[in-house]
Image (cartoon, rainbow, N blue to C red; front, side, top):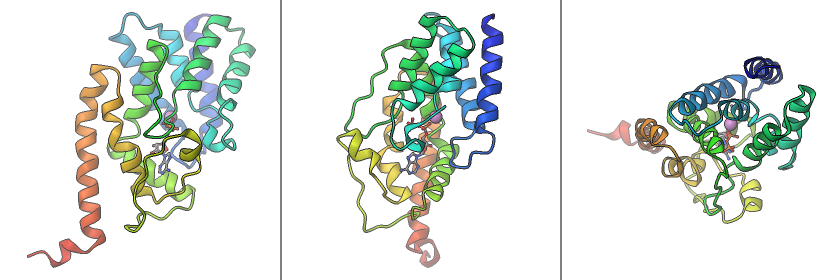
Length: 222
Ligand code: ADP
Ligand code: NI
């Protein structure tokens, strides 16, 4: 099978699987990550476009967040799909590695990517977690998990291990301080960093207004 046919079949497979997902990890998230990763790959000649696109399409295929914390569910599901398509072993391994490494694991936990393709997919995934879409996805996820929007009595926590991050059940606003406001500094490519500027500023503006409204400060303002 040629590369484009494999990409198209993988997109169809993932679209089918994620069409009715309601936690912010839906097909449209995957589609955006795929598009952005593909755009970043065009500016990165050393990146293998097939590995980048397959990594983007399959990066959330069996996320640990929805598989009892099982970190190997994603790499396993990706391998099973690609083997069923007679994909060459080198490509399967490169994609598995991206999925294994991509996830945020707590503010105190380093998550370096071991390939340039992985860096592009991680940048694309992280851009989709910030800005207006990032705000929407955070509250969609919080709602899905039954979390409160905000609780000023619960301070944000710096998770120093993946285990502690996984157990986190904090209100959704805390997630901004525990993860989303830090993603801008953790991007790899200059192109993604540039896009992140406006998205980051928008998130900060959102939080300022949210906290003002929370206390009714805008109501009493002169
Ligand atoms: P990652 O691989 O970095 O976990 P994903 O693509 O799986 O990224 O998506 C994570 C999405 O889920 C983000 O939009 C993020 O804001 C949201 N999310 C994850 N954990 C929480 C949480 N505790 N509260 C609110 N949103 C969350
Ligand atoms: Ni994702």
